[in-house]
Image 1 (cartoon, helix red, strand yellow):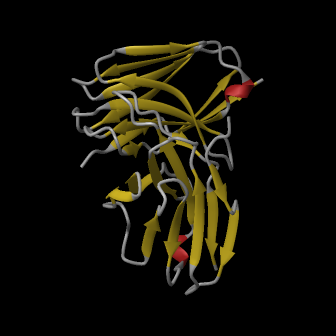
Image 2: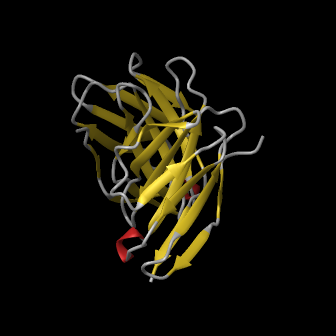
Length: 112
Length: 115
């Protein structure tokens, strides 16, 4: 059974810092990996999806990497802003590509 | 275009009651998923529909939970004899299922509270 772990569980940084969120998964036979953002009381917003054949994806100040052999993915946020404060979730697709297993999330607070 | 919508946004019920939660997927999306998110945790998979049929219901916790998608669009998650432990946010997602990119788009969720 796939297990996804995110470290740290919570992170507080001053505005402007670059930061890295970590995600690890136990079963490397994943289809794709996706990073989401969740604001309090809201649903999930997709940030980046990395296909299993890719090593990274970039969108604006966000860069996500994937290393299947080591079972790890990282989300890099450059020049953090208070508006980036949210919970960030990573999720691995099973090898059929139809079910997501989520990590517990990292709660990020960016202080002005 | 419209995203995934879920109704109601909040539902408060008493232990032992029956509840129905509705999900309207993005138009044209053939796949629909239900997840449950407890406080402070990531979402957990419940059930997945491809068209009208449940392709994978391995995440349903017990037989009090049931979901339908009779016309391959709207889905209803049904919970019988609710228990306090069923309190959570129930999330619905839909996807197009083309090629290798199967991005799931999530609705805002229904917050269920069982008193």
